[in-house]
Structure formats: C-alpha cells, structure tokens
Amino acid sequence: MDTKENQKDYSTQRLSQRYRFSDPNMDLFFLGALGWGPTGGLSAGEAFYIATQIEDGNAESWTRAFEGQGEILNAQADVWLKRGCPVAAGEARLKAFACYRSAWQFVVPGERFATLLRTSQKYFDQAMVELGISATRFSVAYQGGELPGHFYAGSDPEAPTLLIIGGADTCHEDRFLSQGRYYLNRGYAVALVDLPGQGLVQEQGLYWEPETEHSISAVIDELISRFAIEPRKLALLGMSLGGYFACRAAAYEPRLAAVIATPALSCPEELFAGVAKQEAQTKGAEKSEVAQNNFQVLMWKAGVADVAEMMQRWGTVAVDPGRVQVPFLSVLGQQEGSVWKEQTQKWHNAIPSTKKRLVVLDAETGADAHCQGNNPLRLVQEVDAWLKEVLH
Figure (cartoon, rainbow, N blue to C red):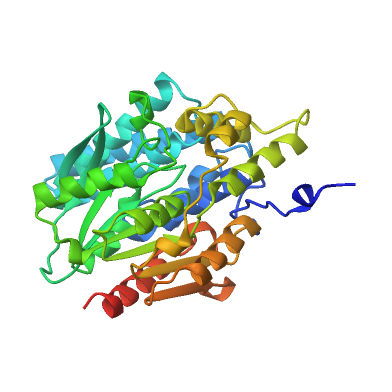
C-alpha cells in the first residue's frame, strides 16, 4: 500500500491547457514570448512565424528559429538607425533581445548558452539607449561575486520603487518585458536584478540559495546607498520560484514596505519533491529534448548533480508564516498545479499581517497561467491597485 506521502498530489504544472505546442515546457515559454508583445517583445505575427519553424519538443529547432529571427530584427534595427530613426531601431532591437532571450531557454549549460544570453544582454542595453529609456546598469557585491541589475528612476517622486525578482527560468532583463516597463510607465521606480542561480550568476559559483533574504538584503543595501531608495516606499515582487524568495524576504528583511508573490511558495521541498516524483515516474521513458535540456539547466542553476542532491539541500527549508507582518499580496492563477495552489492558500491564511490579500485569477481574466504569463498586464493592475491601498 502507498504511504500517505506517496499519495500526496505533488502536481507542479504551470499550464493546464495547450496554446501552441504539445510539449508543456515549450508551450509555456512560447506563451511567455507572446505575453511580452505589449511591452516591446514580439508581435503575434512574428511569434507565430517563428513557431512554424519549430518542431514540437525539438530544442535545437526552437533555438535556431528564435536566434535566426533575432538576427533578422537586429539587422533591421541597424537599417532604421542608418535612416535616422533611432526609436524604430530601438523597437526592433528590443524584439531582437526577446528572440535571443527565448533562444537560450532550452540550451544546455555551456558556451552556447552563455553566448546567447550575453548577446541578448547586448541587444537589451542597445535598445534602452535607442529608445531613450534611462537605465542604469549596476552590480551588487555578494559572496565573492556580483549580482547584475538595472535601475530605472521613476517619473513620479511619490510613487514606490518596485524590486522585481524572477524565478528558476529567468534573467533580470526579461522581467522588464514581463512587468518592469508597465510599472515604469505608471511612474514607479523599478529595480531588476539577478539573484544567485539566475541569468549567468551561477557561472560565479553562486547558485540558488535557500536563505535568499541574504542576497536580497545586499541588493537593498545597494539600492539605498546608490539610488537613495526610501525603504518606506520599497516593494518587492517575486515570481515563480521568486515567490519563495519573496516569502523569505517578507519574513526576514524588515526594510520592505510591501511584498507580492505570484504564487506564494513557502516550502520549496514540496515543489522539488514534485519534480523528483515526475522524474521517477518517467524514468526509462523517452523524454523530449526540451525536457532533458531544461532539466539540465535547472540542476546547474541549483548547483546540484541531480534531484536527490537537491532534495538533500532543500529538504529542511521552509518559511515561518508567523514572522510576516509586512503587507503581503498573494496572486494565484487557476492553471497552476496543486503545489502552487495549496501553498499560496495556506500562506495567505497563516500570515498574521493585518494588510494581506489573496487574488485568484480564473480563465475569464486571461491571466490564469503560471505567473500570469498569458496576461501580464492583469498582474500589474492588481499590484498597482493594491500598492495604492497599502502604501499611502
């Protein structure tokens, strides 16, 4: 007979419906690429053109298609620049960034992964200059390495600063398209940063860390000293695994005025147990190249050889909700798997903060996918409205 633990539902799904591809990882990140369109990513026409060149589940075809379109857009940006149209150049260059960002998603760790990511960073910085967006690149000294980021001053001096943290599959520049630009347009100051295990930080031997409040604290130190950020107006948004980082920060970093998590994750052991269970169930079965490569990348970011080592490292890690007094907004899409749903609900119920809210987004909102990837604007609207209520 199965034990109670074996019977537990450890679903870690991030989508429950299909949008374009049968491979769930490929479908999720194609949806994400579409979601970046309104803030300067690919148009629907461009994204679906790329999709026609991709074989479902074939990682190499995905990378070639996005990289190829990225070079087309980068060349077009140069044409616009020569014709004296810097804004059009910046628009094309930002699309080129979005292509290269997607291109590295399913590339195994190594030189090609790093080259694609660094190319995306180059195009991102070029786009900021050409678009006339004032972005300050900064770095935070941390444990012998550096955490890179971008800071954008707000146009409204009364508006909060929003520190946006991604999750397992992220670099800080892509958070500009998913969330940052929306807040910037609303007058907020915006800080984007890679924590250990994000972007290329793991090249420095800095991997995902269970006690993420330490790196977040170092980032806040830098924001205060370099950009004169006021803690009473500093909010943090954590997305995906970043939802765990947000919970840690809410519990241990007293300088935050508000925290948002989508979804809220207080016990990553259950998430990783779900990954381990899926690995065990599919052992011996043929996996797509996408699934295999994505798994290798995640193990690299975690700094472990396999799921067993990751479970050993993270097995006792959890956040005590009783420590959370800061205003906290938990956001949950209905397509999320049971791990995300149960932990978000439990977290919201357990934290003693007198200013807390749980927002559940269903299919009719168009924002029910993982981290609202199918409708990022709805997340922005929820966060903006809530911050106006709790930070006044």
